[in-house]
Length: 230
Image (cartoon, rainbow, N blue to C red; front, side, top):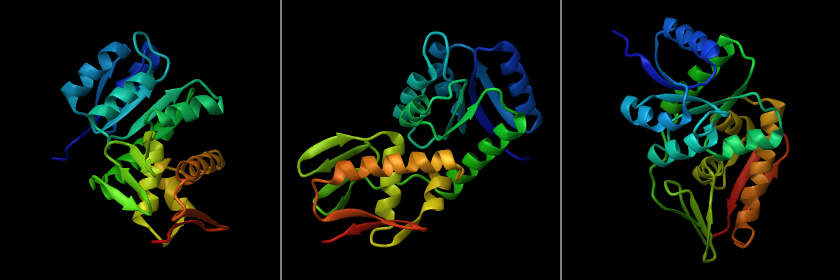
């Protein structure tokens, strides 16, 4: 008998919540739902889900705060934000809170299913890196702690920044395809996500600018080269 993937679904709109829950359950998912952000972490710990779908605007505790807490418990679990917000700043805030993907209201069940299945597949094909310290140039990166130490100064990374830096580290001095990064971190290579990638690469470059032995080189039409000189 096939084991059902478990989903934690946090949504405070009763009608939408019921439709999504029932639709996912007819597709062989096991869905545990709450309409209250304050109860989400307790349910998360009880259910131990394979993936979380979090509305952002919630009573008690919003989706950003829930994602932060979930990431402190399990750093590898896929998180999809459900949002009515369309501003770029709001979406980036969601990614920095630990989200892997987002879906805007109103949405179709088919689109949500594609995003869920894609993230579940990626989490199986690309298990999280467990190496505690990655050293390069004059820098030390701790993926599990989301910290980057450059020339004695420690910087705290967001989940998405840490994932990007892990991919760059894994391909030191070897070209890394842009689409590979987009599919791993965002789940698709849309124009919007491509622009987000540019923002995150710029951030990582800024963090590493004090280390003269490290450079992220843009390879036009392909992606990036994480160049280490020593």
